[in-house]
Length: 251
Image (cartoon, rainbow, N blue to C red; front, side):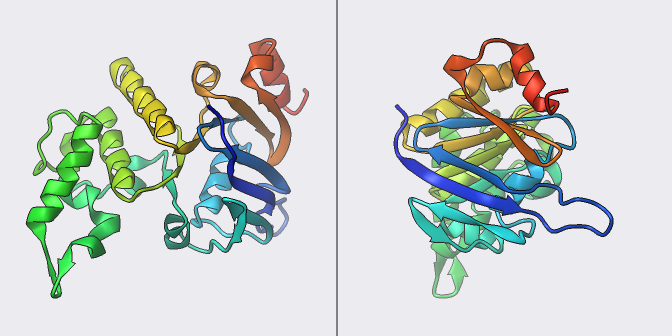
């Protein structure tokens, strides 16, 4: 069931680079509780740049961000996390995980302050709590001391999801969530996304796979060369060709 808006962005605009237009300009949309908003466009459309800006990883020169109807200031990922917004990056190996660290260390990295007592880390509680969330995502193998680099791509993605589940996030941004993982792992990631929705979360999913966009989205937000070209209710999609027309700027 789709609920009230939990995230709204108005007229987001990236900085201009000398001699070049901004990577995106005047981007506006709303994300609702229980919704997957698919973001689709060709390479260079600006999708990843928009979600990175919402997460505070890239700067904005204009625009407003609202969470649960209240305007918020997001200048860094820490600000976004504080407001319950998290980003699962396309490049999980370099930006989503510390590969030489084990599962416990990766899952608890954003929430270390929860485990500090008298200036010391309570590693027993850290491991116990991390395992709860790792079990939720069905990590294989469920080896909490195994380095992240020794897991498959799909299971690395599960570690990232477990990290943000522990952080009690409510707005999940998945950038190419199933790129580089096998079909079986894809199905598991989709199942986890649906469970997040059932628990009251909302999801923005950036994907370049048409079938993924059509199969998972409630609404599709289309971009071309940094601009909005359309918003389509999945129930009103007439054909894949109609989506591609908007994704190519009507060309």
